[in-house]
Image (tube, rainbow, N blue to C red; front, side, top):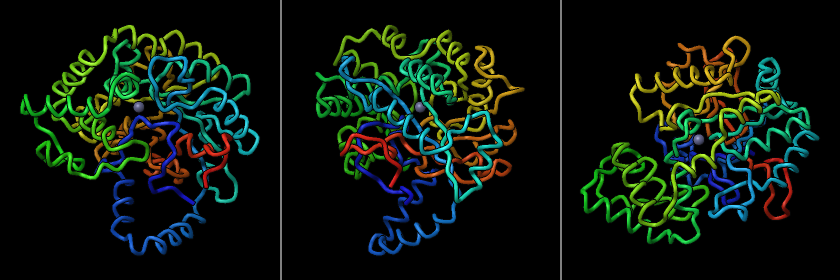
Length: 381
Ligand SMILES: [Zn+2]
């Protein structure tokens, strides 16, 4: 069965976290299934029947791979021992495709009787150096997507927000109250989940549906990641929250959190690939075409300067920050000859590397291959 619906597994959180992006297929699909709710049972059967004819490449997405007890704050993470057993399970049951083997990827995208998987890691976390060593010991290659600003030592908003939410001493209700107070006191403009101007009272009356989070956490993430209008004002609110609720040393935290250029170059020697996750890890669908073009073009140039990407030998792979893109993003990538791109639409990847479908490949979350009840790897069900 393919997962176009929300589920409740909570061990790992995708950086996109929000699936309300109005340009996304997921949003349209989810809304359609909501509209058809009385007939959802029939709709599910039809969808599954349709899915039987789809080819099978399972692209897995990892973020944090760590043990929370080793850190001062919690985050949705795959424990390292779970990661190891998941990789052992995948390599036993599926062909693991190298990100550079585009022939094999094409082959599996077009099959409906045989399955393979492709491993992807978002956000350039230091955790991934250890993952790389383990994968190398199994002769497996994966692809990693570090945002360029993170490589340069900046703490990304998405990770500042993870810290605020995960820090054990911070009450999520108090944090939301503080953000609402900031919005009211400074008369900040905000947008609803679907991008319309609203008051903060109207905003909080929206249904906060998330695959992973409770309502307070969802509102905090959406306001701080996207819905307070203007990047610099939103960032200012994030930093006010950090200094009000914690005494975090931001540059030290960034240094501890992200892979250094040297660590990534070592991973490259271990057989790993790197692709673009943008320069600044922003929602591409909220940027104009020029800004999107710069995010994509310059991020590949920077990866090349760091010797992490070889434009002659490597496939040019883009992973959309927050899973966000629109029709302009697709056109820009066609002009820049991007080989394939990864979304956060949930399910097996289908398509054809010679068509535009290659720029909208589905991914599974690592949670979809993990059974929480019995603490073991599994295939998606
Ligand atoms: Zn990301």
